[in-house]
Image 1 (spheres, rainbow, N blue to C red):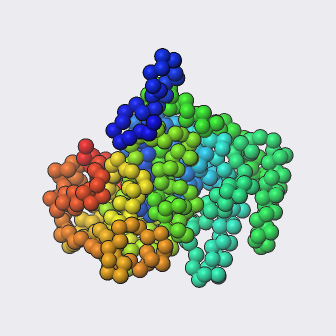
Image 2: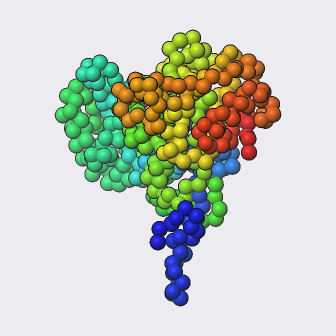
Image 3: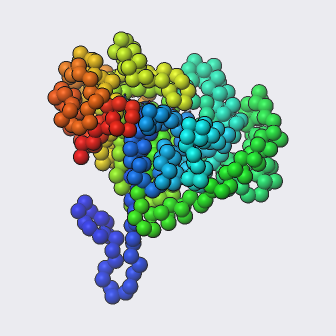
Amino acid sequence: IWSGKDQKNANQPAATGQKRPRNDAGNKVTVVLGAQWGDEGKGKVVDLLATEADIVCRCQGGNNAGHTVVVDGKEYDFHLLPSGIINPKSISLIGNGVVIHLPGLFEEGDKNDKKGLKGWEKRLIVSDRAHLVFDFHQVVDGLQETERQAQEGKNIGTTKKGIGPAYSSKASRTGLRVCDLLGDFKDFSTRFKNLVQQYQSMYPSLTVDVEDQLKKLKEFAERLRPMVRDGVYYMYEALHGPPKKILVEGANAALLDIDFGTYPFVTSSNCTVGGACTGLGIPPMNIGDVFGVAKAYTTRVGIGAFPTEQLNAIGELLQTRGHEVGVTTGRKRRCGWLDLVIVRYAHMINGFTAIALTKLDILDVLDEIKVGVAYKLNGKRIPHFPANMDVLQKVEVEYETFPGWKTDTSAARKWNDLPVKAQNYIRFIENHIGVPIKWVGVGKSRECMIQMF
Ligand code: GDP
Ligand code: IMO
Ligand code: MG
């Protein structure tokens, strides 16, 4: 009955002579996920794969994400739109697990339209089960940050895009979904007013021009209507029709995951592999390759423990050379050495089939390079990643030190073009995580990606 490690066809019925339906697994999706605290270069990896993809999906998060793609010298940044929207031959899908701020969505589309991204509205599909982020959710996000600062002397450093409040509405079952907006508008208006009232009772300073909001939402509803589908059925057909290349673009990252991240300094969705199933309504058996994206060093935006952070000249060098500025908020990203403890932890949860290691070129000028390989507590190595933030603040990082290669790698296009010292650095990372590195990034643009196998 139980499928053992090597048991094949475990779910096939015993030969009883009766005809039984066959469990046709269908197509598999390829998932791209952040393995650190975000901004690892997921957009770039998705863009690379999206050139051949039929469908590119977002399954969680909202416009707190900021994914940069550079094609033919033109830089695009995507927040809610899947990065695959660049490919005129592929369909982009926003799944039920995403929270959508409609003004943000259309503003993003229109901005990219001006850059030459024509016809995006015709290539976008939006799940009718996705929840909506309203303007007041964004205001509340700001009010909650002020409250945290006043109560605890620190906030989370959210993107103020209303992500936390919108997922809170979803969990407390007062949220409104795309299907509600497109249904009976009178009913929608009543529920919208109730939701506003709830938030106003929690935050008396919150003012909302309800009529103006409803008027705008009604307009957005008509612009959105042609794109809306039953996301579950759309994915079912895509998985069980003719062979299709389907890509899932993770937003945020493992260490920002609501369950597994550095809670409470996290976002409000599951940015690990389970989010692909719940955020699209697809079975686990349809998950194929899971690619983890990790930078050759570590960055973090916002507050929270960061054991390998370098609050010194090294951190500053990584920040300036790496242009480490948030795409969504314009904040400087905090920088430090590559922390393999967190990447291994991300692998425990996600089961990466391969890794994309980005921004190797940023390390080109360093005399020596360090990599965090273990955490110690009271002088003893710990095998797990601590759940408690106070504990994580206290860990001592054990480093492995490598000589720098002091060579410009930005023109490298294949493994052999890389200096031996850089090759050793990559091989060490691969062996330490126990996952093959499939790509190495040496620059911003599409062609600056060395494919290893
Ligand atoms: P995402 O949120 O994971 O999609 O990543 P972001 O777009 O927020 O941040 C990654 C930044 O690094 C972007 O500005 C990319 O253009 C840039 N980038 C990605 N890969 C590389 C690389 O290999 N080398 C360099 N120099 N820049 C890269
Ligand atoms: P991409 O997809 C980096 C961080 C915020 C904050 C915390 C909570 O570009 O990698 P939120 O607004 O989600 O409630 O903020 O999570 N954060 C990110 N940091 N990259 C992201 O996305 C992020 N999405 C959220 O800075 O610390
Ligand atoms: Mg980003």
